[in-house]
Structure formats: C-alpha cells, structure tokens
Image 1 (spheres, rainbow, N blue to C red):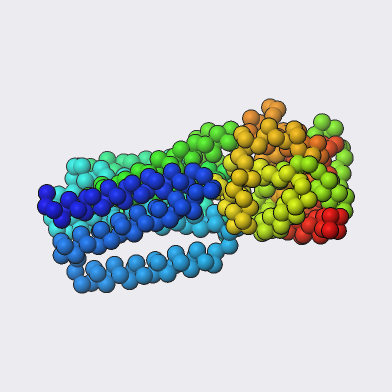
Image 2: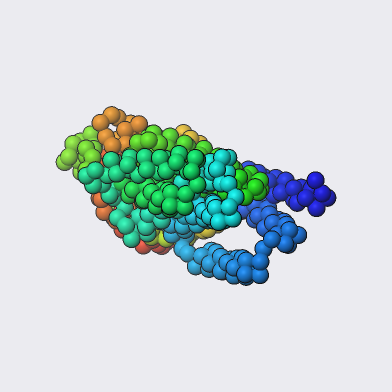
Length: 471
C-alpha cells in the first residue's frame, strides 16, 4: 500500500471517529449541537479526502467533474435554503425528504455501477451483485416511502391510513417480484431485470407507507432513517469506500435502535406498525369513569393564571398542538415569568409527542428553554404527584389514562401520568380526538379544567393574566 493510500485510509479513520463521537454527543439535548458540528467536520473531511483521491486517480473526466461540481453546489444551496427557511413545525417533513434523498442517492450509486460494469463487459455477477441488489431494493423503498411519509406529514396526502381491498396482497406480490428478480440477477446479468427491481421496490415503498396512520409517523421516520443508513452502507460496499460503510452502518444501527425505542413507547410491535391502521378514528371509543355523560369543566384565563402564579411546581406537557400553533416561544416566556415568581418549572417530554423523535425537544430548544428543564417520561412521571398544576398544551393520546386499561386502541401504551397532579389545565382547540381516534379520559377528570383556544393565543392570554397578577 502506497503512502498516499495509507493517508487516505487514515483520513477515513478520522472521519469514522468524528461520526462516532458526534453520534454520542447527540444523545443529550445539551450536547446535540456540538455533536452536529463534530459530525459535520467528519463529513467535510470525508468529502475532501474523496476529492483528493479522485484527482490522484485521474479517472474522472471533465464532464464528470462538471456534473460533480454543479451537483454539489445545487445540493449545498438547497440544504442551506432548507435550513434557513423551513419552519420548525415542518422539520419532520424535511427529515423525511432527507431520508428520501439519502436512499435515492444510494440506490443510484448501485444502478450506475451495475450499468457501467455491464456496458464495459465486466462481470457483475457474484459478490458485487449481492450488495448492488440490496442497495437498489433498500434505497428505492426508502426513497418512495419517505416521499409518501413527507406527503402525509405535510397534508398533501391524508394522514389517515390509506387502505384498499387487496392492498396487502399487492404488497406481497411486489415483495415476491423484487426478491425473485434479485435471485435471478445473482445468476444472470440483465439490465431489464434491474429496471424491474427498481420499479417493484419503488412501488413497495409507496404501498408500505400509505396504510400507516399519522400516529405511527414518528416510528416510520425512524425506520426509514435506519433504511437510509443501510442503503448508504451497501453503496459503500458497491464502490469500495469504507467511510461510506461506517457512516451508513452507524446511521442504520442508531435508526434501528431508535425505531425499537419508539415502538416500545407506543406499546406496539414494529410488524403491527408496518401493517398500518393506527389513527383511523374508528377504534372503540373510551369514556371516562362517569360514562359518556361525564361533564367537562372549562376555565378562563384569569382563573388559570391564579392557579399557575400561586403554584409551587408546574409541569408543562407539550404536544403537536403546540408545534402546529408555533407556541413554543410563548410557552418559554410564560415559564420564565412564572420562574421569576418562584414557581418551579419542568417540561414533560413523551417519546412520541409530535411527529418525529425529539420533535418537542427541538421546538423548545429553539425557544431557548434550558435543557435541564426538559425531562423524559421515565424521569418526570414520579414528579407529577407533587406538581400543583400540570399544563397540557396540545398533547392528547400521550396523556390519556385509557392506556392503563384493556379494550382501547392505546391499551398498554406508556403515558405521562398527568392525572396524578393536584390540578390539570388542558389547552386545546376542541374536544376532538388525537391520532388514535378515541376520547381522552383525562378531560373528564374532576381535577381537569379545559381551556378551549389555539395554543399560541391561549399562552399569550395566560401570560398577560399572570403579569397582571404578579406585576
């Protein structure tokens, strides 16, 4: 091995180390920004090392360099534009599109490599075919599936499960076609077979995500992220770049672990989630202990402000309603005001609150909420018993006590123990159900007061009322 090759390999080792350290730092909201920076440095080193390698080998033509440079500039511009203009509430959609781009790019690497080898008369059978086929299948499924997921999150496609007669049989047929074609390609070089494999995989990705309801989107995003990493790792094997292999394996493994954690947080198996159906709104309706005629108690801003201002401890429970109303800055202002009045503030974060893993953490971090105040479900649940007020803003299924008893759509799902607080204030626009499609028994709890309003408007009114009391 030449000195040049050794140096390139050492650079790739440094890249792998940056990715590992960056991933470790992302384990905590307090260090996540630094983790992103370390990973970015690693990716920059990987790109520079690869460009130096291409220049040294001299295998890229002038046209190739033109395409490479133009593509890099367009991609960088699109990424910069997205980072600066996309609202935090649309971040789940953006993550899904990133998954699509990653999976699609990895699949194209395999397709190009296969076509190039076929055109040059080089054998594409054997080991090369295995990684190529896996790359095409996983990358294509991720590409189309992520686009459908983004469409559901954006509202372009209905968030309800799209189910039609024979859908599962169609999925099975597409899987059989893809796997059968893959086996055929192991023994026979065929460009038409490659086209069939791509089309069947793309169709399977669409058909796999369409029947999945909005409540399962956090898990789906994690699963597709894991698939993106696996496809990238396969692309690394295809072109013989082990920096890609390491990066893809890390993303695939971390995404797989996160998917398992998210599924556990919903008390649903991954197979059950992929089968779809959650969030249809046609599940058995849960009612409170008082039955269907249980009373709902509403509250005005002044009365709610009195409870908040004279509490010793308040726990804020954010949900997607907070994100949709972009009320995170208002909540941070209200919390700061209450803290200045001597109230102990905490934020309870459920693993599947919002539309992607860490959605609430990202929103509240944008509003400069101190990281130590953000507490995960296992840590914060014991604190509800000593909280004077639990302020629920736009959260629904993750607070529903119906999960504790059998016979409901969310039975067994770990929830935030909001009903253990001395008093509960729920900010919600209406009595509409969450993604699971069942009534929330928390709303009929005698300790619960409903504040019917848009989250942003409600928080502003509460803040003004508290200022009047303590100012």
